[in-house]
Length: 49
Image (cartoon, rainbow, N blue to C red):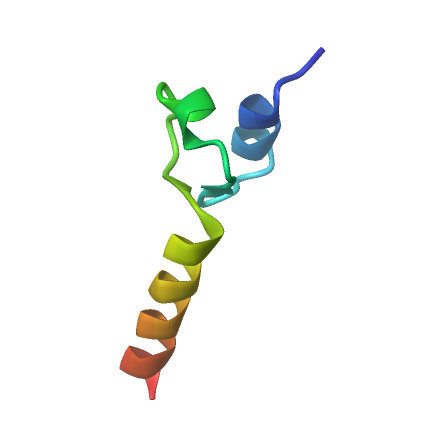
């Protein structure tokens, strides 16, 4: 069975959004909570304006 992490890497995901970050301590891609991603996206949106 393929893990969520491996599936995310396989499809080229830039990050994993989860409530359970501790399960992804060895992740090769960034892992964020939904709150953290909201802040990141808002910041990115403001810098592009």
